[in-house]
Length: 68
Image (cartoon, rainbow, N blue to C red; front, side, top):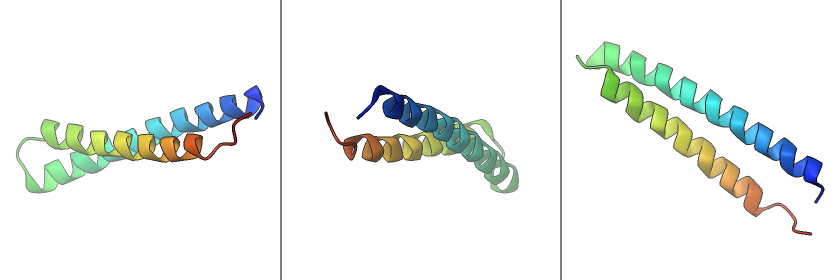
């Protein structure tokens, strides 16, 4: 595996992390506004769910890479 491929995977993982965290925060804000009075804990919870999902996907991706 070339170093370039690993760098591309890291870039994808970082962008996926930011995307999922942001989408989770927006979803948490929406749920908090619709159903709860306090929005901060709901936004933080959903943002953490998004970050955890992206971490899981990146971990699967890196474990399946061929080793050289």
